[in-house]
Every structure is written in structure tokens, then in C-alpha cells.
Image 1 (cartoon, rainbow, N blue to C red):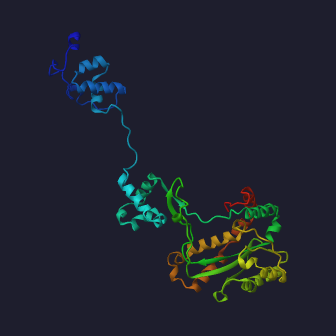
Image 2: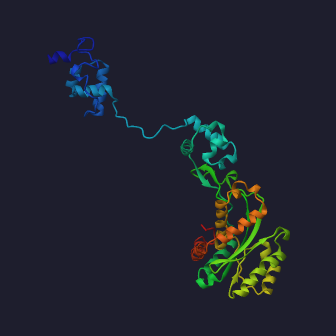
Length: 377
């Protein structure tokens, strides 16, 4: 009987032996759970069933059971893994359309991803997560817009290196006697970092349209201030009727304050950056006449001037406490801005200034490690 059955072909098989999915009645209710068969066995079973080979012959030739035959017939030969996560909101053509929109204008790189639906009507129905996923799949990310860096002039770098090598040996008493001074333009408008959309490999980050630009804004005040002995020192607003800050204005309104402070606090040493009014011959003469002890300051060295971070602290404080200075600066009167700047100056805590003083030796070491080049400070 077995030898005869092995000779049967698809044409000679009895109708009862030809496969139907419900061939054995007792299997019709069997749950389709996974059975112990290999991938090759399942492929062989499906091939045999495709050519209408009887179940009995399949069982004999492949050494499988009815349950395994039924499972192989109802399932794929290779088990499929469940896909995790939701379906992407944007299809490939839609993602390409988003990239085309992004690259069409340089200004669009500065637009936060969450605000793209507000700026582009064709993407108004997209959520922040959909845009984020699409941008990441296209190879884009958000980075801080670069600003112009430090000078790469070898002479400048050498001066910075020599100063840092000497200043790293300052004692704490010597550091506390140092008057750090600077002036800053305080104005309305956003102060926090500007982000842009660039490729993750940074291949287009330094293109002109992706750099952060400065724009003149009004109202604005020039504020000059100092920190000394771990706290805030003399300060003054440069009034508009004084005109530009030349050597005469600088001597009359700034150096007079420094002289008064040094008289009351002997042993202090003044520093100033290399602005034209600071390095002029007239200013040097005025410093001698006022008996103000001062040290030459290396050019392009804001990372060594501790008060630079005080300006950032004040701008952040203003932006946090006075939303109008960021979002509606044109409606701010100069007198209002002046009062806000003074509030920010008074709000700077001594603990913050103390932390800046504690970082002095690390800053000098960073300049030395960079061989006079730019540092993280």
C-alpha cells in the first residue's frame, strides 16, 4: 500500500486525498500556535501543498504531524517580527518636500522645528514629533549658530599665552585686588542662543546663511561696570548726551570713578580691554595722573575677563523677568530699559561672582593648553 501511494501523482490522487485546509475534521478547531519546525521544513510543506501533495505523503516524507502541516499552511515560512512604534507621519516624498522647503531660503534654517507649521501652511497639520522624526531621518539636527571666533594672529596668541603663564601663579589675594572692568550694550531683543537647522555631520554649519548676525536695536544703553574683591564695584551708564566714548569722556566719567574707588581701597589694580579709548596715549597719561595702577591686558581675551559672564547673567535675568525686552522691545521706553538694567545689576549675587573668581586658575590653564588660542570660557 505504501509503495503504491508513493507512485500517486496529483492527477491520480483521489479527491479525498487532495489537500483542503479543513482536510482532517479533527484539526479544524486546532489553534494556530507555533510548532517546532524549521524554516526549510515549512517551505517544503508549503511547496508540497502548492502542488496538491496529500497530507499523508507530506507526513511520511517530511516526518511532520498534521498540526505542523496546518501551521505551515496558515503562516509565513519565516516568522515575522512585530513592528515597534507608530507609522511615520510623513512619507518619503513628503520628507523630501520638507527638506526642499528648508533649503529654499537661508532664514528658514533659524526657524525652530516646532514653529515650522506656523511658517509653512503646507505643513500646518504636522505635529512637533512628526517634524522632529522627519528631520532626523533626513540627517538634520539643531545646533547653536556659530559666532566669529578669537584672533588667530600668532602675535596675539603669544601675548595671551605669556599673560596666562604669569597670571596662573596669582595668589587669591592678588586676584581679589584685580578690578575687572568692561562695558556692554544692553538693549531689547532676544539674548538667548539662536538655534538653526543644520546637518548632523556639520558640513553646512559654517555657511554664511547659518551664522548668527548682530543687528542694531533700540532702545539701548551702554553700561560700564566693574567687579572687584568678589563683589560688584563702581558702575555708570554712558549717557547719550555725552556722545561717543572717546578718551575725554572715558577719563571724565569712568576713570574718575576708578580713582575714587582706588583711593578708598588701596592696593587695587585696574584692567581694561583694548578698545580705542582705552589704549590711547591720552588715556595712559590720565591713568598716571590719577595714580591708578593698571596692567596691560592681552587682546581678544574675553575669556580672561571675569565680568563678561556677569553681562550674560544680567541679560538672562532681564529676559526671564521682563518678557517685553525679548518679544516686544520696540515698545520699551529708554527710561524703562535703564531701570531694568539697574535692577539686573543689583540682582547679581555675590555667590555667582565668587564662582567666577574661583575659576581663574582653570581659565589660565585652558589658555596655556590652547597655546594662546580660544578656550571654552
